[in-house]
Amino acid sequence: MSQAIIIGAGIGGLAAAIRLARQGIDAEIYEASDKAGGKISERFVDGFRFDAGPSLLTMPELVFELLDDDLRFSVNKPEIITQYFYPDGTQVSAFSDVAKLTAEIESKLKVPAGRVNGYLKKTAKVYNLTSDLFIFGSFHRLKNLMNLKALKTLLNFRKLQAFKSLHEFNARELGDKRLVQMFDRYATYNGSNPYQTPATLSVISHLEHSMGAFIPEKGMFQITDSLMKQALRLGVKFHFGQPVRKVETESGKVTGAWTDSGFVPADMVVSDVDIHQFYSSLLPDKRRLAKITREERSSSALIFYWGMKGEFPEVGIHNIFFSGDYREEFRHLFKLKKVYFDPTIYIYISSKYNHADAPVGCENWFVMINAPSDAGQNWAEIIEKSRLNILEKLERMLGRTFANQIVTEEILSPPEICKQTGSVNGSIYGSSSNSRYSSFNRHANFRKDIKGLYFVGGSVHPGGGIPLCLSSAKIVDGLVKEQVLNIEILK
Image 1 (cartoon, helix red, strand yellow):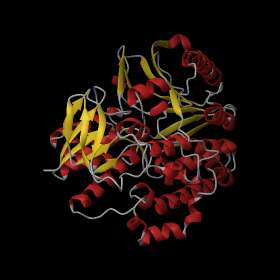
Image 2 (tube, rainbow, N blue to C red):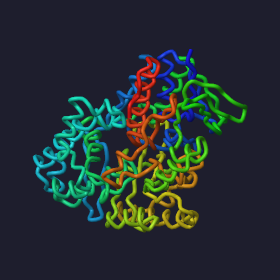
Image 3 (spheres, rainbow, N blue to C red):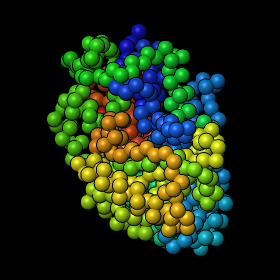
């Protein structure tokens, strides 16, 4: 039986282990921390439960196809995906039903429903042209570029909007600056700047509005919990608190990995750690590390987990309070490496649908603002100022005070994100997508020159976020099947 070592028990590592185990491969996961899930984790604070990281699920079928029927869980499709609050007092409800969404936009922002539908159709076309090659396949392999689907994508390259920024595309197609800001926000789903990232990323809004946004019945950690149960059922072995220190190769082939307990032989290694960390410590490679280091890092986040006394009907499950100057906010994040004084605020309240997540008469507020990656900033000072700015902004936009309603608090900053998840500098998605070439620059899911070495997770192809991390494991599954069949992998 083939032996596989998976480095890291994030969602990419869990999915890879499940898929390899189903191939009959003996899979073992080595995880530096004491728990699985990576960024999809949870916190318990004084009777409150918080989803610590991601808060919305798209493409749930990528999770369900990994699970036996009895491990699949229910997902809720909220009537309103997000409540948007603007500095001018405008409020827009982003309904999950597209007809209701376009009617709401027409009513509140005076943008014709037909114009919004036209935009969504264009984003659907971008998705249909790119998904097979850029999401579910590896364009790093020659054979994947030599088929009719790839040819169709290349022939329609102009329709991918790769030469416009997301903001330019949105401004042209949508007009109203508030609606443009709503759809510019999707650049943050992979830690990027809408004024730089290519408009191809408009596919993210397609996933959310046209394909559906969901919340697991018991919270996002239910994804991790179900995947771990599935892995254990298939015989995957977990080694928590045992980081891999070095990957060993010989004559262009993986031979195993070193842990604190010694050498573990293996036929293949699947890395689910930040690719920067991989080449700086696990398999040192100055040339590859230099290339990755030159790429601009994605943004990070500053998160306040607030246990709130009281119930607040003026906010929903997902809420966005926009900055008055979005362009300046992103200039601060990526150019100045600072947190903007008027940040866009995201608030997620899972107790709105899962009442067990907060004590009776209370709510659990996950309050997040965009933050730059860690570059040695004074985070204690940033946290103090940001907390005041957030509370002042919420008071101004909602017309009431909130500071005295906070009964418990925990904080997660970029340095802590780095420490807890291994994301270098706290950059949640590895490299940003602030270049038209970003997708092509992401590390492949394999190494042509080292047989048996594979990569999954948000810092490699196809990118960050739950669906793409799961897709990376699916790509590796196909590559391993070919290796087992002794089919040569071409780059």
